[in-house]
Image 1 (tube, rainbow, N blue to C red):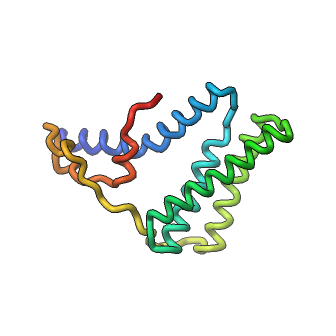
Image 2 (tube, helix red, strand yellow):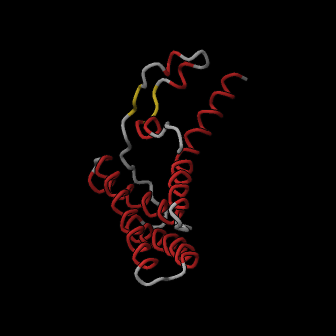
Amino acid sequence: MEETLAIFIASTLRLAMPLMLAASGELVSERAGVLNLSLEGMMLTAAFFGALGSWATGNPYLGVGCAVGAALCVAAVQAWLSVNLRANQLVIGIGFNILALGATTLLYRIIFGGLSREEIPGLPKLSVPGLSDLPFRRRRLRCRSSAASSRIAPCP
């Protein structure tokens, strides 16, 4: 029972971190008066181009750079449409979400084919000092991805 609970908590934290980061970014943009409904589209675009960059170069850190660059491009286009053209932020956000879903699916099928088993290099494991000293299930918490460990920070 203890092992199942530890696995459940670790999986919950690992899967919730990208959503928590996006939510904290949306909190900042909402405080600035910007309605950013295209967060899911940005995350999907960044995930696709991060995986593509990591696969193409064999270097996961270049993949992270590709992910940041792709999300930055989507954000810049959205900002240009909202600020310069005064387009409706709600429509732009929903449009980018639909565009990201369709574009990433199409590009995946073009590049990798319908059913692919390509291996994508991931970030190395990172042992966080002090985390393995916690009293519950030390073995499960000792080695986690460096990306997941870097996301453990308080939200604003």
